[in-house]
Length: 220
Ligand SMILES: [Zn+2]
Image (cartoon, rainbow, N blue to C red; front, side, top):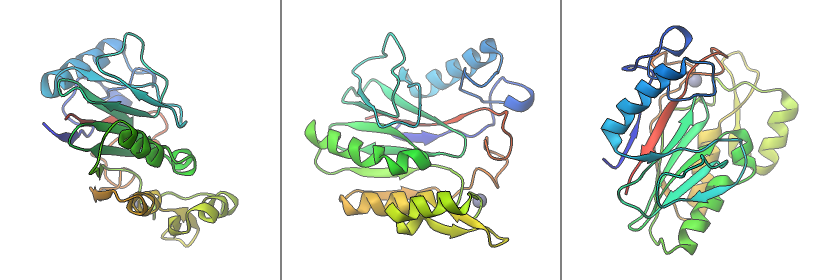
């Protein structure tokens, strides 16, 4: 296993969380989430998760942390430990180098606070040279409608984020802006161009506020 992205199928949860919901904080039955996590563990081995808060804290881990770190990026050099980022529209970014891997949660706030670039810098501090990235399914630039004020605030920093919806209202293309921001610092990114909002095989917070979380997983 190098990196994988799950979708909403193949798990044990019901209703709004059907079926492979991996998050405990969304209102799903904890017993079913545990079954879903056991299934993930069978597939990817031991893994670390984080409590994501749209911040720019990076946690460097070498084993499964006793307490789930409050962070939006995880880095490890341990080839026996997978890293997990949970999403339902935000961008799951997985970074890979010879010595280190990282899992990063990038939403609008994360684009603005440069959590991805900071994670790349931290990986380089820790000895990574060539770093490449993979972006998993997230909401696309046509579906992520925002008020004009918010649009303008983001494109002042990231002009490539500018976008419009099918009806011509303002929107943000976060993947395009993130890819550009990473290219500037020499990180090439592969993209899975599935839109979570449009594709019902995925959980989407925009589509259904009460919903589960899919994950991106990477291991060295
Ligand atoms: Zn879309």
